[in-house]
Amino acid sequence: MTQISNEQAENIDEVVAARNRLTAALLVEDPTQGFWTMVEDGFFARWIPEVIEMQMEQDPIHHHKDVLAHTFAVTKSSPPELRVRFAALMHDIGKPATRQFGPGGVTFRHHEAVGARITLQRLSEMGFDDLLTEQVAKLVGLSGRFKGFGDSWTDSAVRRYAVDAGELLGDLNLLVRADCTTRNRQKVRAIQAKVDRLEQRIRELARSDAEAGRRPVLSGAEIMEILNIPPGPAVGAAIKMLLSEVHSGDRDSAESLLRSWWSERKTAGHDA
Image (cartoon, rainbow, N blue to C red):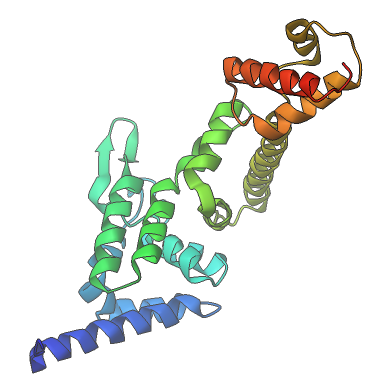
């Protein structure tokens, strides 16, 4: 049996205590004061130093909002659910490492991808559950996707957004909604309306895709031509069979199945 030294035990206790403290702070209704206390007493400097690095203006020239204050505001605006709150806290964690100044102003290229890597590292070091860690990192990595959304998005782009988010789609949209901390109410309403439109398009596409999946690979006219039969109950029976048996768009397989089914049907004495 492996013996754990006193020093190792103390380190484990320290990690557990840190994990418990951060979890508790994330789940209170308004975590803002608790977060600032954790900044002042060195908690974040010890466990997630990138949080301290976010104490910077996004654009020092125009004095645009402080990244850390914005982050705390986003976290407060998100629902008090651990996964969403964690993603809100970490969503801009990659900005300090990616900030660059150029002719067009300040940029944070690929900060979401960098933030996702930082999230994986820091949450793993604190011993958070692997699944939670991976899901929070995924949300951080996807957190900027919505910024390009507009009515010009194709159906394929909308599907890709939903597919990439997968089971985290609802949480991603909650994060997007919380990430609007401006005091301009008109801008807030516009952002929320855009999310509403995106969610509506996702629902509509899901319905249309489901309906498309319920269409037979072969149409009624094609069935009549292949089997050389007139319109009638047999065509309806063939369509019903194809809907229940064919789960892909493979027309050759569908035609082969149709011919076999028809042969068995005639052998059994069914009328055409």
